[in-house]
Structures are given as C-alpha cells and as structure tokens.
Length: 398
Image 1 (tube, rainbow, N blue to C red):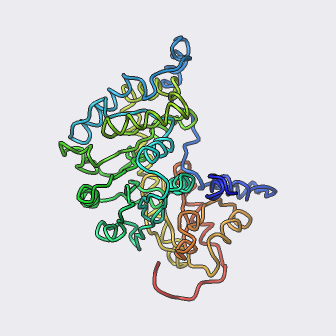
Image 2 (cartoon, rainbow, N blue to C red):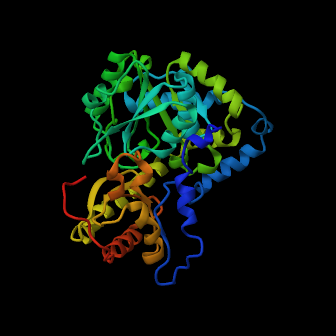
Image 3 (cartoon, rainbow, N blue to C red):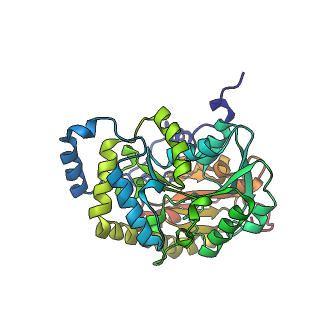
C-alpha cells in the first residue's frame, strides 16, 4: 500500500538542512545560507506594535470567516484593482493560511485524481509535491536557456485531462520576470482551451518593473480564466503567521471554502490583522525593501564575472533568486553537500526543481539571496570561484 504522502519526495529545504549536521564553520568562513527564500528578520517595529494591540482584541482569538476578514479582502481588492488597472471585488478574494495553501485549495477545487496540470520547468517543488499527493499529473513544460515558458509549446501538451497551467512570476526558482506578452499569450491559450491559468505572484512586490507586470485584470471577464495567488509573508516578513490569498471567480472561491473549512477553518486572525495593517500603513517601507532586493539583484550581476571566467552561467535573476548553470562534471545533487563541506555554502541543486527524467537539473543551482547583503554576495561568488572540481565535457548549453 502507498499512501498519498508516499507518492512524492521529501521536503527539499529540510533535506538540505541535514547537510549541515556535523559540519563546523571556521570564523573566517561562516556559513552562507542561500537555500531558502523566507526572510529571517522579524516584521518592522510598527507592525509588531500593531500586532500587540491586536492581541488585546477578543475576536483575534476566535474563529473568523473561512474566506478571511472582510476588511482584508476589501483592502486587497482595492489595492490590486489600482495596481493592475483592472476591476477586482472583495467577493473575488479569499484569504488563506499562506500561499502554499492557496495553491493546494485551488487544485482541490479544480482537479480530481488523474487530471493534469502543466508546470514550466524548473518548477516550484511544493507545487509538484501537492499535485503528487493529490493524484494529479504534473506535466512538465521545459523552458530552455532563458527560463521563459512558451504558450505555443504548452498548447501541444494540453489533453482532455488538462485542468490548468500554473505559472510563477517573478519565478521561483529561476528568478525571471515573465514578460507581459508571455502572460497574455498563456491567458488566451487557457481561455481558448477552456482551462484555468494559475499565476502565483508571491514575489510581485519585488518585481523590478515600475509598471503593472501584466494586463490580465483589465479584461472585464478575467475571472472566467485567471486565478492569482499571493503571499503576505515576503512583503511584511509574516512567514510564521501564514497569510496568503487566492483571487478568482466567486464560484471557484465557494469550492475553495469547502477545502479551507476542512483543513484550517480560518486563516490566523493575528496574521490577517497584521497583513491588513501592512497594506494600509507600510507602502513606503515596502518600497524600501524592494529597493534593497533590487540592489542585491544588481550585486549578483556585478559579481558574475568572478565565476563566468570559471564556466558558470547566469540563467535567471530576479526577486529573491538567481539560477546558475555550473561547469562541473558531477551532478548538482552530488555537489550541493560538498559546497557545504568545502566552502561553507548551502544552496539547492537544480535536481530539486526538475523531473527525474530531465538531466539539465544536474547542471543547475538555485541561489536565494534575500537574506544575503552585497558583502555576502561578494563572499559567495569568491568562494564559488575558488572551486577546482573536475569540469564537464564541453557541450551545448542547457
């Protein structure tokens, strides 16, 4: 007998943390941890003060509406309507216990066992894990050297069992920001074929573009096709409070409500009140956070020459991530624990983001730089440049 959980792999970040066991790091070479994108700093002091005040409210400690606090749904609808220059109403917003739950609830509402969902590769591993545990087939859509998925290629993968295409932009793990034309092409493909387009925008607050990243919400009937996912964790450092969102048709949210009521009953009341306060009061602070992340992204580009001379290649960079192709003979799965042992760097191998049948992951690493400043990024690249492992036989770029 195989249980649902046995149909998928172990959590990659937890697996990577085990590589640290028994390894000591000298004072002159402390660990550089670029394995996880979650911010490690607490929320800003004004937000913590607002959360302390919220703890004194009796309703903070009670069950709330399954689909989230009405005030938070209203505020998110209002701000997203303005940002995307479209129309979004509160009944098209549901609040969830983090963005992973938003994805899980959406898949539960759309799919049954044996259905298919198209995922561009490299994919976000938690999306793949939930599809596995749901009995839903994850159909890989290779993206090639630029990590941008192609709608025409996706069309050839659609079958009568296809229920959705799931995109992540800015991308995890690749960091790339999908062009608005790419999103528009996938939207038209999904509408034309009668499937849903799921767009996970967890990292949208750190998009480098000054304009809306896509025009999809400007379509008056967007909710017949589009489902957007969001996380408050990265914007306001609320990772431990688990607050996310699903944006879609009210009929879809009615189905999602069944899932949420069964799994968690309601999202964290304290987390929701923190998210609402952040939306209403931390616009300038968040703009500063975005500028810092964009500077770290620039630092990645500034220091790439250190390792390009050694055969490395930057495949994608943006939001919290850089995605690198390495030049070595061994697989990244083998090399990742060696990075910890030899140069004190914890990074995830590309094999964690690829189907087992796709060999390109063996040549790739994800670097999550949200918690590494400019000096740390320079130290990271200096250490990578010092590696003298056997090189792969020259061949076409992955």
